[in-house]
Image (tube, rainbow, N blue to C red):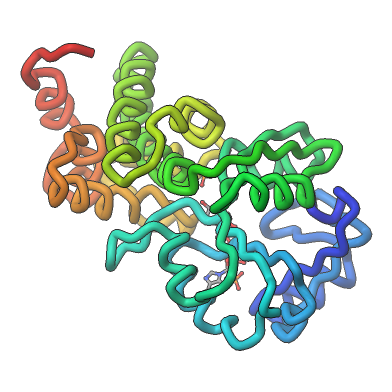
Length: 307
Ligand SMILES: NC(=O)C1=CN([C@@H]2O[C@H](COP(=O)(O)OP(=O)(O)OC[C@H]3O[C@@H](n4cnc5c(N)ncnc54)[C@H](OP(=O)(O)O)[C@@H]3O)[C@@H](O)[C@H]2O)C=CC1
Ligand SMILES: O=C(CO)COP(=O)(O)O
């Protein structure tokens, strides 16, 4: 919707033929964006061949579907098409960054990443939103940020693809942690502590992967963490609230990217020797090997160190 509102010629390709035909006809997506009109210039189709004409392709499918989608589209993309990863996560089976995964499947294409604070419904309504577009070079990032920005959607270019995408992936884990704190009734002070100590461990994770730790203080890091740790629009926060309140959180049917990211980040952190106590606790609470009360006791009684 945003890209279309910015004046671009935009086609939304989905795999469900009936749903795409309905969206094209009614100019609504009542399931995902109830009551919000689609931009008049947005075309909706299930015909994947439409991707052949695209100069910029946004990959908005969930993290764990990025590789198979890239593989499926490889033969259909225009040779000079740039791909922008919009999912927030890491590949669960390999622990790899999504830009690396997609690059592996689509050699020769520019692979960028879009991340930061922005709920789909807010963006589609035309509420003011700012996010980050990270690419391999400053020139490519500036070109893509310019192409996708519009009057209500402002993109800041960056060259830190690692920091930007890990900010998006790990803020989901920290949003789950903040939800657990809320659901368990542990108070606003605990949430503030989690946000700032969570940001510290996110910075360590980014630096260990070769990204810029300073990136986490920006939109895709602190910005997105503040949004999803405090707004009940966030699926990750809601998942955490249920977990903190009921001790388990099965079956909302929502996509909860942080549940995948927690286990993969905890595993990678253990392998690389990165200190990630909050992420580790969230992963263990989700897999049922740690209860919330024990986790809090464990986090609070760790050795006292410099902030
Ligand atoms: N929603 C939001 O506010 C934001 C979401 N994101 C990120 O965007 C990503 C997607 O989230 P969101 O759109 O909310 O998720 P949804 O679950 O709402 O939608 C996912 C879409 O991806 C499609 N899909 C799922 N699996 C596949 C597959 N294997 N191949 C092709 N298409 C597939 C689904 O198709 P179908 O309908 O046919 O099942 C559906 O249209 C996540 O990584 C999320 O973190 C980032 C910023 C904001
Ligand atoms: O990433 C998001 C907003 O920036 C969406 O968050 P949730 O996936 O938690 O709903």
